Image 1: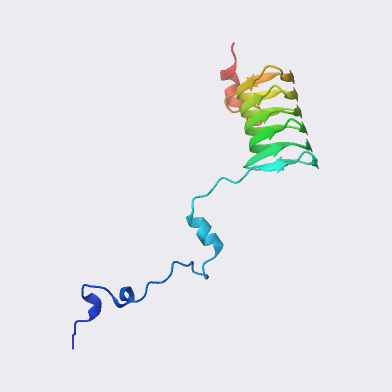
Image 2: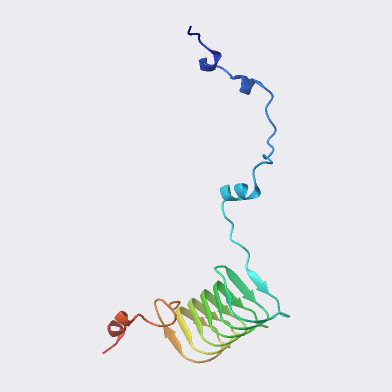
Length: 163
């Protein structure tokens, strides 16, 4: 009635005694299953080449390197404005590095104007660095949260006054 099977006995199982399978991926698994288990790599920055002219707004959670001309607003994590670039519109990013020309408001947690930068517009920032030789026309305003539309919340306005 009851018998002891070899399944419960110690020692190698029948599967383990057979020839080992080669370490080939299972073709039934999709590529996305493999990517999901691997650590996510940071995507490469989007590069807008010097011969590219864009009319319209750009928005990404990644990085953008502009070498061409953009007529519109740009929102990104890291925005680098190349020496040959011209941006006519508002720039909003965690980090903004301006080597070229920006005509419009610049908002960023960290804003850096290099020696070749040309900015015509207001800068709202948390931290700023302006290298010698940079050309800047506009006002500079420090805010703890410059990405919040450049406007302070109504409740915080009275507390911020130096009265």
